[in-house]
Image 1: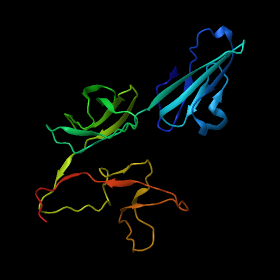
Image 2: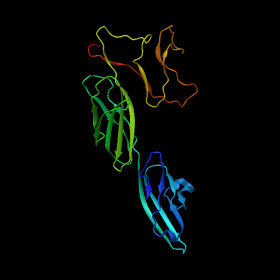
Image 3: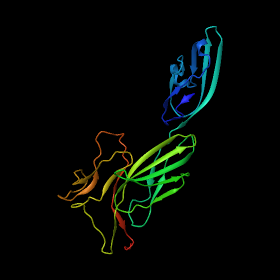
Length: 255
């Protein structure tokens, strides 16, 4: 037998348990893990070995036992290791409208087995549970009735059809909506910019607020802007980030 039945998509260590009867008569064991790309590690003479499999999927494993009298027997099994789902989700909007629902969409991926169970848990940032919603389809859009402007913790737990699971927690910060009038709107960032924020998809962000100091324009003292300050001499640097504004209601404006 093998444990666990689920390994990460990038590979994982698997424990193999020898269930052979009559072990007292066995002089030697020989395992073939069906993984020739692992080289010398593809075989073992241990009774209960471990092996690192580089990916989930189907593997042919063979165990051979040889007795002190020179008698041999083999057992071959095709073992399927499923992947641990890569859990992710997003929300359609974090703009707060009292009495309306906030919508969430699942983005989880399980390459080797279908996801069949999802559970969403909504909490305060101090840990208090506000509610839970269960779903059996990744296509479902989940709606939750937050009652006030605040930060909330959202956890998604998923499980695929072979029982492999995973979870992810994110913080959603609900934001007020500012209704703009026909007088227009101007913001120069020189005084207050607290409700603007920097977000990053991959954890890298180089946005700064201040007086830009690079070439190509004439700076004005005290005139702030958002700009990027990329690291020098890093040709492989890859940033996926943005500056996010407050929520604006533009319905009263015309083109």
